[in-house]
Length: 267
Image 1 (cartoon, rainbow, N blue to C red):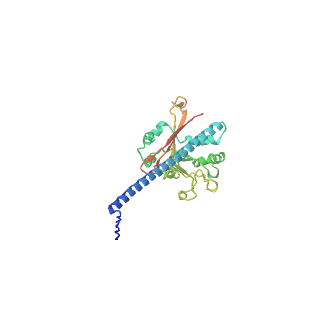
Image 2: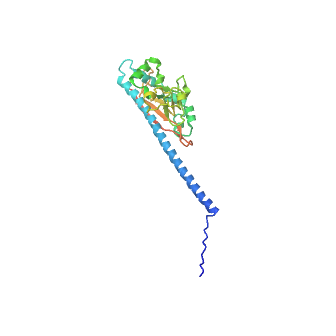
Image 3: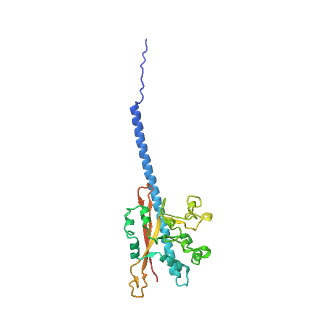
């Protein structure tokens, strides 16, 4: 009796099938990476917006603090916060002054049709930022009395400051932030400090403000603003426009966030 064995032939995938499978895998991988990148960009963008809002809040609260301290103690002769508030008011524009200096201030910024470089190129000259780390009573006392070389420029970082004007208020390489360092070389070093710094790394020197600035405008109506009472104009209020500008994480668009606070003139 003869036994016949049936031979089985095993065939593998053809080259076309392999290439087709690799193509599908590549397409899925690229799609997954693109989704991940978009997710990371969105997360980074949301983080930057949160940090920008925090910087705006810091400026708002700093201005409110100076204003409230001035109101509380303005009856005291030579009060230190009175002097500081008056220094802030030196940066205030009337509406006509601001429009004459920067006609596009109210329109171009809100339209987001310009780069941060263009916006900074047309930044009002009296724009400023408050250093929140030197608002304590002892620090302000040293500043108004010029003790130890302290000066108002330590608390009011202004575009019209004669020294290092180009780096006082400038564009941001990342997101709106205040740099508390002594010089340019420390920006990328471990000596760079932020709001969470403490101890040896706690630097009160506000070197520059990146991507954030304040522009102040007084009310058009007020006491004697019409020139009928000696020509002294005491506005009813002051509007402080706190604005930011920086490039989004993907680098394809400009992100801007702004806020306005109104402080009334108690005089």
